[in-house]
Image (cartoon, rainbow, N blue to C red):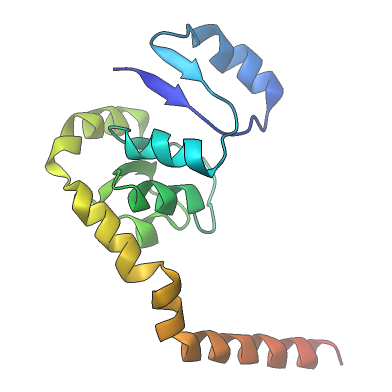
Length: 151
């Protein structure tokens, strides 16, 4: 199965040593940082998105973007991933690379429409607007805390 990697290189030494030797332009390609149109095309036509992040990512915008395109996500069960991915519903949460490999074979059991539905139900501008009072409450609490800490 072909692997297409996109995004910025954050650690050039790691990339040169551990990634670049495997890029053959046929089975493994790196397309660099892509804009919205290319991103949507890559994600929308992907079998799955692999999100092997080894830190506690606070949100995971690329995960939501993938699901918005109807593409399931396989991610390490860290940070915000359990809030974004329902295991077996819109992707898979894994602990190890071996579990991720097994999950690749299980992607056909995920309905692509379920991935999109999660985004529509939870992450659209309309959804945010419907819950604007919750956001205002959070902003007020932050302002109150900031005022108290500033004294």
